[in-house]
Length: 462
Image (cartoon, rainbow, N blue to C red; front, side):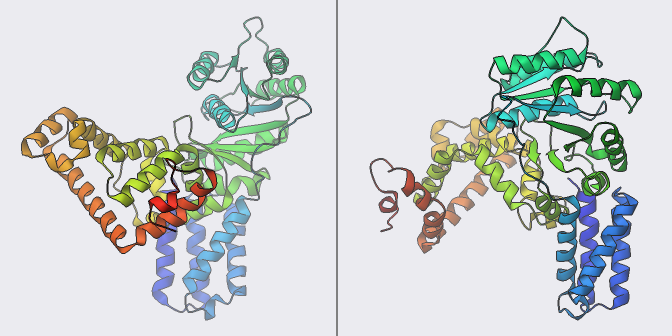
């Protein structure tokens, strides 16, 4: 996500760093380079101009010219200005408790990923403890109703389909009554789109709005379109006042222009971003996290949220305990890989870790996890528990069974041995015990005992 923009900015900052002290002329030249990079990323030209002007004013105000590390001052100023341009954003969705169901109207052009995003939003809400209802009101695009019905079944979310009418306003009005009767506290309306903003589309959306009286109206925009996405958001907002924007396809070859420009141009916040094809790949938009990822600093808060959502706390603590005790097996490693796979793209996860984004193109792909899992699953239970038993003949058998090579099997076993040795060294130095104590024991002590024993005593802590 945003790799080209990140790398271009990183090159500019390297150039500033190589100069040591910078002059007023150096600063102006740097800002011209940043403006050029933003325009190449398809940032709106006026936004790029205002952005660079504000950064330059702030950088001068912080006496960047006298700083020993001027690139740090510039990076910090660029970061803070990015956050300001993309925010502020009120997190979450304001619910209408008095009405009984909060109605969210989703609109957008064809091809923006609107129907898929409706399903992702419903799953997001369901995981938050809500009872959402999806409404198939896109009667314009062939198979849109069937697509939403299939997605609803896959995610375990009910879908309202009305075969008795071909009028979307009637469908939405009846759907809201159905949601109240079924005690669905959120109703997500999937409305029709067009190839472009036209009068029939806007008239239909206006009728749906009158009939369903939505509490929130969100526009789904294709993040890969850059300024075109911003232009469509402007067009919709003029005819149909929006409450927020959802940018999709930010995991693809997107240049970042829409993410930086849309709030400044349209005046409406980005509420969510789509970062993949999986149903879970919808995130609440955080301006600070996006700014950090644009600059290659990772997104620690976003990573923690992903971990909390997908990682089983009990399993994580058990794995940490086994590492501490030196009994962590390949079976345990397999469990960690499976949990990691649930969290999304491996490359994107690594880029959320501070410092990893600075490594450039990371040679880690999602299929690497599949290959590792295949190798481990081709082992017997005894081999997973005691990897030292895996001799040359066993390695050939495992490679054949997993569709890999002996070299791949050797690499996995070598990495696992090195990880085990590192854990043993940490355990011997007492470092791992302190890490474990700070990260897990305090939380665990508050909740329960482990197998009838205090976890601190199990680990040798008072």
